[in-house]
Image 1 (spheres, rainbow, N blue to C red):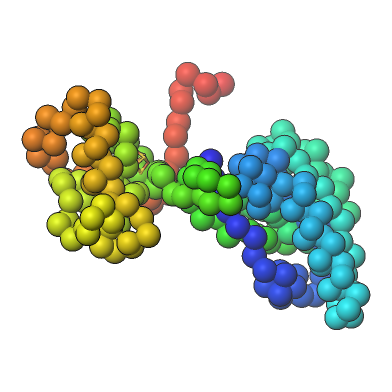
Image 2: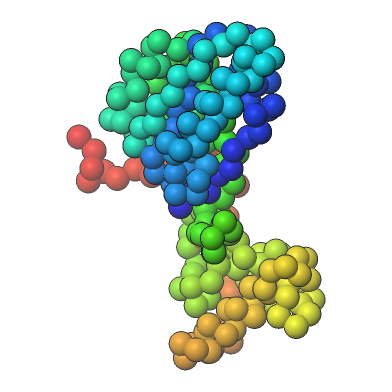
Length: 222
Ligand code: SF4
Ligand code: SF4
């Protein structure tokens, strides 16, 4: 899922300077699961902004709404009335959601209330970790399902850098060496021979390095 975290209230107040009627708009999908932008967080942020408005004489009204997905026009439609009534939208969606709303409402200021961080999973209660950098050409099948692009600090594709101590990464000793994990995983599934092959340099063309990406499915186009 997409993992994000909330901006601070002082940051949000700064962003919203000059607006009188702000809609805090949540998203009910990834950012709800990672406790950054769902109905509960919308309520917390809206309440904090109302308190700040009163105590700091900022004089703005705050309304709140959460839709199922901000990155999908069908669901954005459900927020049409609330967006029309506001003079600015504070989106608690991921960066894609914020931009989808802004594209749909070219005359309405739309602001990001979250910092979108990465594609990851809930590792344990309260801890999310990055698992995928969306490189556009997945090589997980070569590495026992453990991504060296994301989980190795040096993105090593042909074995470890040699700097790990015990099983810890030399760049960040709080994290295990990805290559230790890859070795153990390939061993446990009987595919250690994969490490004998030399991996050619990765084609980064399909990654973000090649510019913004688009997927076109002709079989789904009308
Ligand atoms: S190889 Fe690329 S697509 Fe696959 S998990 Fe790693 S970053 Fe994500
Ligand atoms: S110690 Fe392991 S995870 Fe860290 S940079 Fe080196 S190979 Fe990558």
